[in-house]
Length: 194
Length: 363
Ligand code: SF4
Ligand code: SF4
Image (tube, rainbow over all chains, first blue to last red; front, side):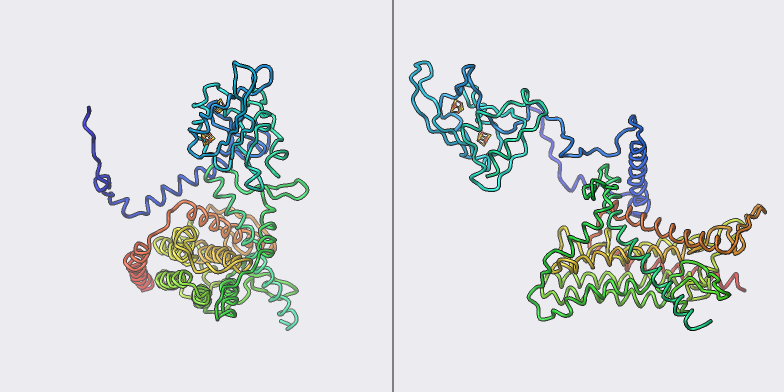
């Protein structure tokens, strides 16, 4: 065990030098810094305006609705329920996710299946996205790898609280980001805005 | 000069300077957003469009105005409804009135009559501006008081304390300028700055009063109540005097800030940067210190001067924006310390040293 270094807040208070206390040189330095950003960015904007594509962008921001930020593949986005090759849900209604969910936002009603290998399946499977904290515990808890958070959908909204509850049909119909590519999903209009 | 012509000239000049202040003020609402964005590596407001044209978000000026006018005009439950409505008017009215004495050009000759390019050439111009700026404080104080809200009242009190503290420095720094140019008329001050120092340097106030310029700029920014001196407003956490204002009444307070910013820029230009003077430009054209001359007719000279005034004012508006988006806000005790313990003694010393030098040279 190494020693833990304790830092008192008062120790970190640096004594300002004379020129710093005068403040004017520091004001000048600050102004030079911001003015440099201003002129450099203005120059880059101007170059790009006149079609010089090689110029660096003048802003570090994304023009959001038109241009989207690249997402990390690990990013936890809207849930979906995976399907078996024959199209039935992978979920076996084991209630693991419902149990582990810290926000209590999963509601599953199970029913029996004749297939002895599966035995159970969800009759209904609702996730109240309005309460979900996107912790991803449900994904980790699932023994069947049935619930996944890889749709890449981050814009989730509805006009009512009920609209935020996704049912099993919606969850099964959502494609993963890898299949969807950059195509936008139009399910927002169909499902959420009710 | 005939009476009709005199009235015509006065109306023309008034319209020019009011339009100048108002349109530049409107433009500044856009500049404020765009300049801060460019300084911070962002794009800034660019969404308002007319028929798909965005022109770098310039339509946001119109969009803002429409928004302000169509919002609900909420009036708090106060016994002073009239004063509550009057306060923003006072704020903006006195700021605009100060432009009357700002000279934006020398003079033009129309039909044999010489017309000075200044709305009112009063010989106590400086005092007039001070009076107007002091009265403008009432707008803020009355807004805080009539809102019937403790936070607003405290904001108004802070504003009073700050403005009174800084008004003293504001006035004292100009004493140096007055002593050097020996006049209170702004037009005379600008004319006096047309000379040359050591044969090559324009005799601008900033070269004669460098310390005075710094002090004046600081006090003037404090007068406009903008960051780093936005104690009266402090909209993000300490809540200011316009808490109970909404719709265009709030818009007027904001607009008054921009107008004051232009006013300060005009004053700095007039007192310290030669007003409408273009370096080496005399009434008959350029006369360079190395001997060469370029002859020009009066109209060209006059246009150059007005353009020079507008450019200088725009530059100082830009500089104030740069300061506003660079420096953090002062704490209230720091603000008072700066005003009373640093700026005031410095401005006194500045006036004293200037007086001694002026007397010594004049002897
Ligand atoms: S991500 Fe977390 S909060 Fe959301 S449904 Fe899964 S377990 Fe519940
Ligand atoms: S943990 Fe997986 S298999 Fe179990 S109920 Fe949840 S989604 Fe279905």
